[in-house]
Image (cartoon, rainbow over all chains, first blue to last red; front, side, top):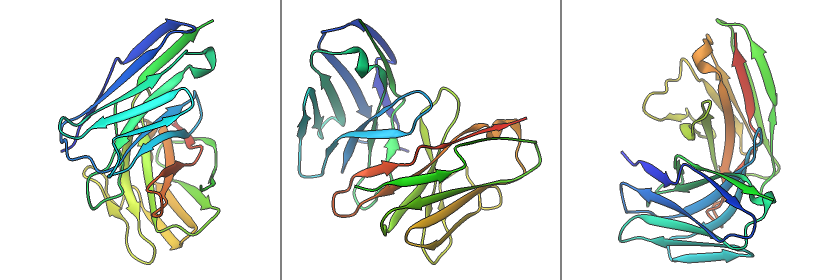
Amino acid sequence: KQEVTQIPAALSVPEGENLVLNCSFTDSAIYNLQWFRQDPGKGLTSLLLIQSSQREQTSGRLNASLDKSSGRSTLYIAASQPGDSATYLCAGTTSGTYKYIFGTGTRLKVLA
Amino acid sequence: SAVISQKPSRDICQRGTSLTIQCQVDSQVTMMFWYRQQPGQSLTLIATANQGSEATYESGFVIDKFPISRPNLTFSTLTVSNMSPEDSSIYLCSVVLSMTDRAFFGQGTRLTVV
């Protein structure tokens, strides 16, 4: 059974810092991988999608990478801002399915 | 992209009763899913809502407790039956667009069972 661990579970940093959030899958055969953010009381917002043929995606201050040999992904946030405060979730599918299995989440707080 | 509307956004229900949650998508999608997020936890997949056939449930979830309907490619319902306080969670509807493999989520239904 696929299990997804995110490290750290919680993080509090001053504004302006560069951050790395980690995500690790027990089964490294990841097909698609997405990073989401969830604000309190809200649904999920898709941030980045790494499709099966890709290894990295960038959007603005965000960069996500996937190492398929190890089943590990990182989300890099540059020059963090208070508006980045949220819970960040990684989720992946395996080949032949569109069912996303979610990680445990990282709760980020960026202090002004 | 896809815009997903869920109703209700929140509800407080008595134990032993049932609640039906609606999910409406602004376009036709093949792949639709229901997730549960228990307090302080991440998301757990309940089932795949299949259009025209019975839903496919994940381990630990059964049709009698979480019946799902999918009458067409834009709409689905999830019923939480015979509720207990342990069913207090956020329930989320999700779709995956086959052209992009990207998943989109509704805003969720926050259920509290008292």
